[in-house]
Image (cartoon, rainbow, N blue to C red; front, top):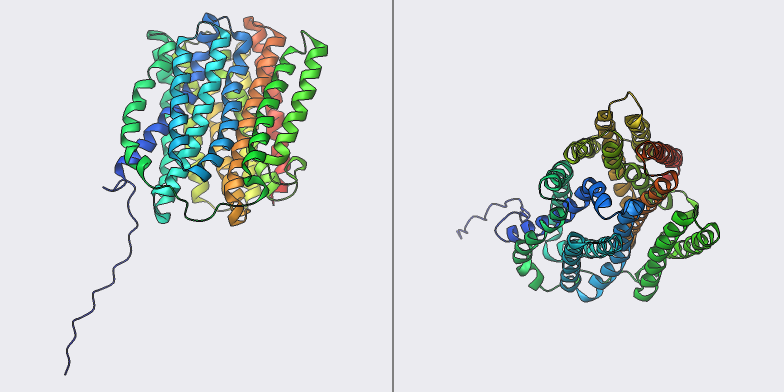
Length: 463
């Protein structure tokens, strides 16, 4: 009788660990880069009042945030197309270099205009870097490990959101606001060293890129240019309306036309008309960002100028939003429910939180009411905004998931940029004294609460 050796027992396949020997260095490098970008984004709001005072740039308070976001919008689209066709290493390195140059320019700024240019350079660098990192994950990690890599990136935003504002406030108070920017630059070097092996890997895609209308390099670059330039001209025109009504109105109209042209090509069909399903889902991302960041960016200014908070205390008030955001993200991943109802709940939380937060500048009310209010706002963002991203991918055909992910980023950044820019214009219109800033903050809060409530009403069209 023929005796054969027993077959080896089958063992379950274990996907490679992102912190295992093969991917550990690349993972740590990616997380460090994301952490640095996130820290800058979460910290600059706390330092902005001090920057505005020293550079006499309070009239550019809102546009300094918008410049970063508008430049990021443009860089997102261009870097995504560049990475698809030429690989991720060059877009990544270009993005990192621009980010470092922007940080150095911001730290060395001696005028409001120079600081504004620095913010735009930072935005281009951050936008290109993040998009290239996403492509890097798709090329370097096996399919089954990518969800963990993206989850790690999300987690990398949590720590800067929780400690960034407080640390930035401490640094600005003790060493000066310039070191909020200078201090990040040396940390870029170890991140690049850790990513050298990943940058040397072949970067051919696993499958052919989409050939749809939103994958054409020239058309999409022109659309991104039109949207970014249009948003910038629009905000500049709005800011000038009260001083130069005629030229301000012309700029506003021209900017709106250019922005509409760009968005018509960057977003899914019928998005600007809030068509049912995916088009409205993509637009919801902008409603979340506009209502939340349109108030979030002015909380430090209001607390410092109206209530006399120091930089560190104002940073702590913002940190609470990160706590709520983390809780909301966790809860939405554990509970099931109708997507449109979850989006509506998230919008409702932000609206309620904004209305509570505006009480912080009223006489006889403690400014610390902003802290619990912003926990609620953060919860709404974590619960609702994550639902928007998941829903959009579910509603997207496989060959359009990349284009629709880019559309989410466009509405996200544009919503923030327009809301913050309009808020800054309102501050300039109303005035810069303590009482006038309080009034401006109330007006901004009411406007952003209205946007959140509108999003709650429109959430039903995401079905």
